[in-house]
Image (cartoon, rainbow, N blue to C red; front, top):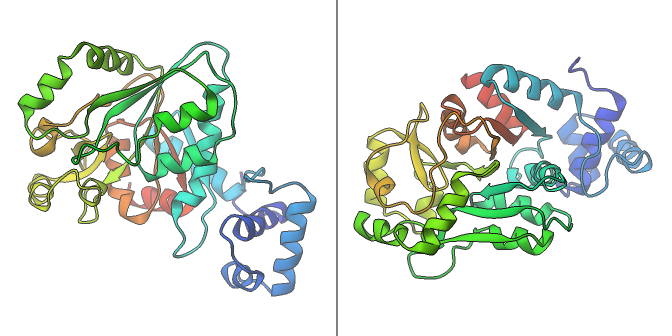
Length: 315
């Protein structure tokens, strides 16, 4: 497919920037390099032709090209690339509707599935963008503990939020995200209810996870799950990213040190034959996403245009 934008491409992009990114028509004109009058006409066309509702209903040619390139480069099973929202915008706002549509695709399947879920801002954005539906045939299970260091519930845990929207049985992981010691972590995992949730997560039919960076703005540090000294130790060992709290290097190899010896829940094994879909975007996450793709911790991806281009350039 040609990456030359069609009139519908331009209208869809203008409508996306107006209704999702919240840009003015002057800002859209500057972003797209067109006149204000043309920006106004494109936004009107997007609505008149039904291209924009809450979600983008037209697959922009450039995004389709990026999806094909990512699929070929990394051997991915599922890829969705959402249009970018421009410089300075939160990438979660761009990818959340596309991620929600991908999860809803599985939830609408009639055969019962076990759907395992990670945590994070992108995952929470996905849940917020979902429509309500009845999906009692499926079971939802968390891959990661839901107890923060202070004993409170983890803020970005998503199993309960999704269950409220789809009314499906759900199984949170009742352990700390990261225990103080390996011995305490092992003791939690010996408990009968925890073993049952772990066993369910291990046999999940499909997995959705966020991908966190391990740079100095690492989510594990920002959310208080690791100390700065622990982060530095893992960075020195080559830490590039984390999935469901488990830290890996730039090749996607899990590290045998630091918090990985105390992380609760279930590690996503590289090379699964089942769908393991990463929900992530942003310049700081590119090394982490790249590592997870290389080792096939994730074999599917929902991201945005700038991140897709950066991944292809890096590869």
